[in-house]
Length: 181
Length: 264
Image (cartoon, rainbow over the protein chains, first blue to last red):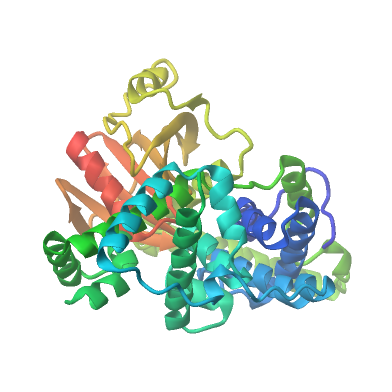
């Protein structure tokens, strides 16, 4: 990406794109697990977005488009480069069998209590225990993307997003309930 | 709906994504099923934990400044342009004159009433984006509506007329004074999950507030539209005009407008 003359401001698309830097960086930080790689990933995302700006249709969803570029860049570049194809995660294993009714009720009560008391670091740790796709759907949901937009970002069907989100949330609940807080 | 059906759509239900009849069916099931009601509470608690306590990592300011400096002003760099042959210059001047004068003529003679409304929507979205980008967007952080509203006294020549103090769904984050088109605006920022909703309040006189295509929200008649991925609500209420802008879902924006309607 070329620099611009001092005093010039980014155009309308640039201004809007830059407004999403925090959300993009947050997802990048949770995917790459460190600040330096997160900055590189976001920088690369904006470079690719600028180079492909002609392909973007004004009036459509710039936010979802940027998240898709970030996610594709991560999958095609960062994950491969680090030879770290993390595909497993708490959300990729089958949930444990339901407990008998009495034990189930007791466990539900404990789970509610622990969810209410879960500290920030516990929640972050639980999120980092998910697969990359699990983390991504949770964070995009928090970002307010609809399931349709998330499906565009991930390049999958809306139904797949629904099931990934459901599995990821179930895994988070299980992780938070299982930990002593 | 049985328990299986309800649990499948519980998150949609909580996020207000169900049609009203389906929403009612889930509500009715939850009222009569303790097990699903408990599941509903657990899912709600997980959402609260994620929204309020999961650490957020905003991009460092220096990094954002670098990104801003590197995004070119225009898509086509001056360095890549070739000088035009002189004989084309006259044609270019003529073309520019046509391009400049035609819209003026259009506006003067034939401009649809939508043109002014469109300018208001564009301004509202631009102002919202500026707030998001700004390093220090709020001049007064929220310390309660009774501190925020009086803060505008002496900074504006009108009272913003906002009574909604924020709540758990839309916490008031603070306020600022800005400009909306040709006039000063009171700007209030509310939170919605991880998002911001900007509310611009201005003196309504002289602006082309939409009169057609309005929908009723409480006692208000609002105009709903979207631009560049942001949802926008505009309405006039007596001498004041309001613009709500955010990337939250349209239903969420309606919910906030309802709270305004009830409280003002």
